[in-house]
Length: 106
Ligand code: FES
View 1 (tube, rainbow, N blue to C red):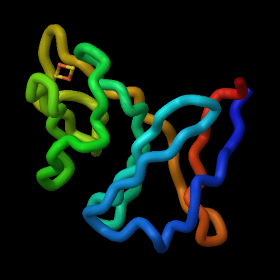
View 2 (view 1 turned 135 degrees about the horizontal axis):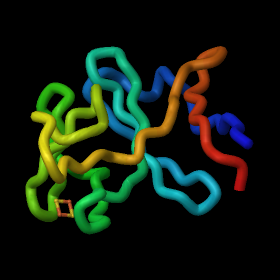
View 3 (view 1 turned 60 degrees about the vertical axis):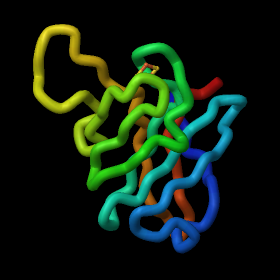
View 4 (view 1 turned 45 degrees about the vertical axis):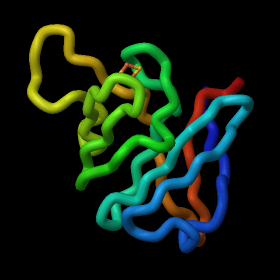
């Protein structure tokens, strides 16, 4: 079962910014990329490094650990191919000015 969790005011997350939140002990990063929201698990699919401080270039997020890049617009490494890794993406939207993230019921 899924539920939505409020993680703060949307106006606090300006374009180009990110926010680290915790939901049921999970670490989640919310990005505002050119006005579009993206929420991902704060764990790189390569080896579990934190992505919260990764460099963001447009929608391309670079993992600080080994430099793999992920496109937040798809959740996956750019360029489809064998062995392509993808982030764990969570649905996020704004409701009444609040950032709402959809998670599986714990
Ligand atoms: S843990 Fe992210 S690139 Fe290796």
